Length: 113
Length: 113
Image (cartoon, rainbow over all chains, first blue to last red; front, side, top):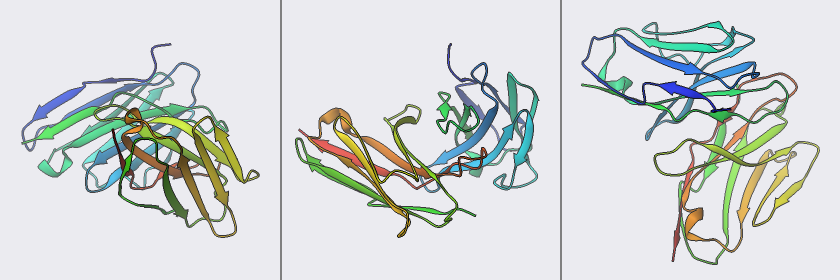
């Protein structure tokens, strides 16, 4: 298995633009997590899905952020409109119920100018 | 909700010495405590974990201890090597359901040759 696949790896955009980050979890994993990593705030859990259903989105910073998981093999995190403070590395991770381990993707580094 | 604290935030040791990182958690229902290592520019990866029915677990040069009463757990690295230099994250979650995996703020470990 290729592991968790994220795209794009790097994104530079201007304030106000829409950003869409994509994630393909490991086949057979039924839980998917989106984390944001910054120097100031560390690894923040934004939202997680179980069997494609959003379980907890209390970490989503505001209405500008939205996430979907239309099927077991794909998820998106969208920011609209983007702001400079959204600049961070966004990680997607997947796992299997009751096993504990999270498998992270390589991350998407977002820079909003 | 769960809150995980981690100390120290930075740690420098001489090669061959031991390193200890300590974490505390707030939710007494948490029963799964993984540790992740993140090398510079890379994804976090699981290095060891411990469940609440175990007080200590060892894997070669790394060990983790858990004190459920005090709600704290620690990572011990012995005979440190330069390749141990990385950011280490502790985390806590409830494993009976795929609950949130909440990470501590991280410890940047530098092993000086």
